[in-house]
Picture 1 (tube, rainbow, N blue to C red):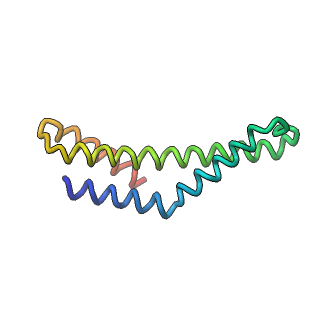
Picture 2: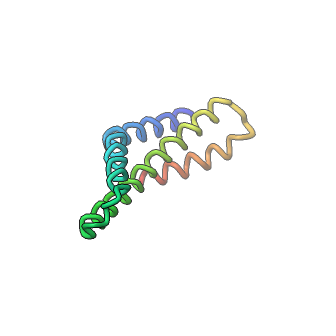
Length: 102
């Protein structure tokens, strides 16, 4: 299980990097800052477009950060070598693998 878990973690970290999630986070923050401007809604079409883009980015960022954090936590649990946790680790690994494969 340890090897499979590290392989999944590596694949998630690789995808996270290839998708430029950190750059997307910066872009999302800039859009959020724009949305806080007092005159943001003065151009409603532009505001709707920016809001929609920010929302989509935030969902994508949250998905990948959550996946990366969960696999990291699972690797730490596996490293504890606690047999009583093994079935839970296996189940969580399968769930994460299924989510990543989508």
